[in-house]
Every structure is written in C-alpha cells, then in structure tokens.
Image (cartoon, rainbow, N blue to C red; front, side):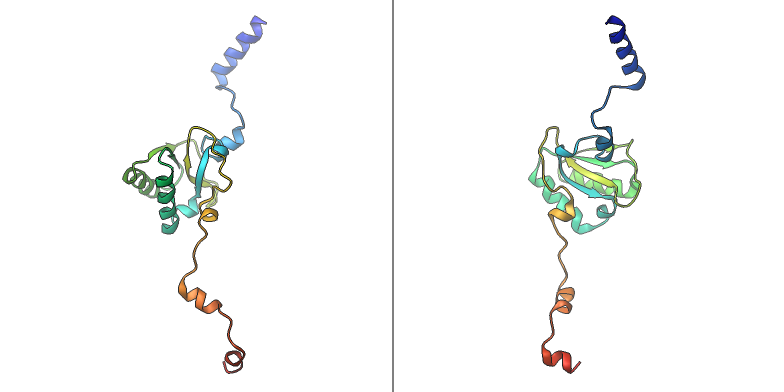
Amino acid sequence: MVKDELQQHLDKGRFGAARINPDEQRKYLGTFRERCFVSMTVREMKNQQDRDHLITEIQKYPEGKLLINGAVDEKVQKDFIALASKNSADFTIVNDATVDSEDSIGVLLVTDHAVNEEIIDIEEKYPPTASKDEEGSKKKKSLFGRLFD
C-alpha cells in the first residue's frame, strides 16, 4: 500500500496532476465548458459586431474573466487586452493553447464555478443582423413587378 502511494506521488511529480476531461480542457483554454458564459472563435474575434456583443456580456457578468488564446495573432491579442482593460475585466493569456483553424476558440468569458449556459457561441446568442440593402432585395416582388422586369 505504501509503495502504491509512493508511486502515485512520483508519477504526479513526473507527469503532473491527473486532469479531468483533458480534451475538453484543451478545447476550452484550460477550463470546462460548464464554466463558460460566452465563446468567440478566431474568425469571430475579427468581427466588430461580435466584439460589441462581448462587451455586453462582460458588463452583464462582471465576475467573469477573459481567457485569450495565446496562439492568436499578437495584434488581435492586444485589441482584446485593451478591450478587457477598458471594461475593467480580468484576463489571462493562455499560452499552451493552439489554433488549428479559424474555428478554434480564441476568447472565452468564464468564471470559477459552473454556470451551465446553454448557448455560449457569440453568434448563436446574438445572430448577425441583416443590413437594409439585403432586406430590400429579399422582399418578394409583385406579380406585375415580375412580369415587367
């Protein structure tokens, strides 16, 4: 029995503490999905409308903390650090994260306890609004309008 405890202690020192759901923690920048208020992909980080929605979420959850993917472009990182500072939000840059594609998670607004938000993707929470030009072209034309075009 003592030998097992000694081996566990040695293994922990050698390999680090055992992690629960390591794949989930890797995807969500070292935290669990249940602790996330909102997420943004690398692609969404470049969209100003999504940034504005993130500010809304930061104001809605002042206890939240931003986790910024350290593998994201430095200029984008600086923009989000400035955004966090301007809105008095804590932030951490996660350096052991990776960016496999534009759909990898770039920013998370998280807390230290489970909140179990059903929808965390920023574009699902705040669907993009269509511009007036797009709305006008989507209107159906009348019968006479279609005949005389």
